[in-house]
Amino acid sequence: MESPTLGAWGVGWQVLLDGLEITQFTYFQQAGGMDLHPVSVELTYGLEKNAMFLNHAESCFACHGLRGQSYGKVRHRDEVEFSSTTLKRLT
View 1 (tube, rainbow, N blue to C red):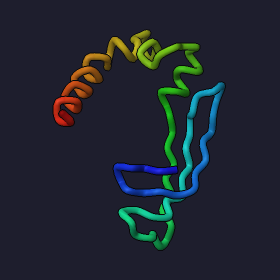
View 2 (view 1 turned 90 degrees about the vertical axis):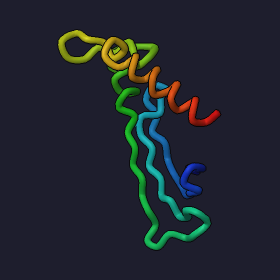
View 3 (view 1 turned 135 degrees about the horizontal axis):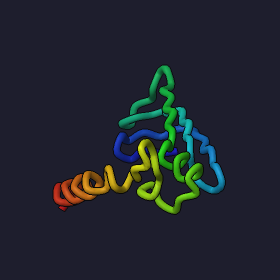
């Protein structure tokens, strides 16, 4: 597994649920060209992908949570604004 933004690499595993990656476990052995002692461990969860599976949804924006609100209705505008801000910084 690699994390190019950190300049890190190491051995890792992915856990798939119905073809969706829901968890990733990585032993980072090196970061920024330096060996790590002790080896760092990263454990990530794809909560939105678990929600997609449980909701039988094609997109996380179609997932429904508390009070019947969809994730898209609550967070879509924030996601669009964050994405466009990030894109402007990159160009």
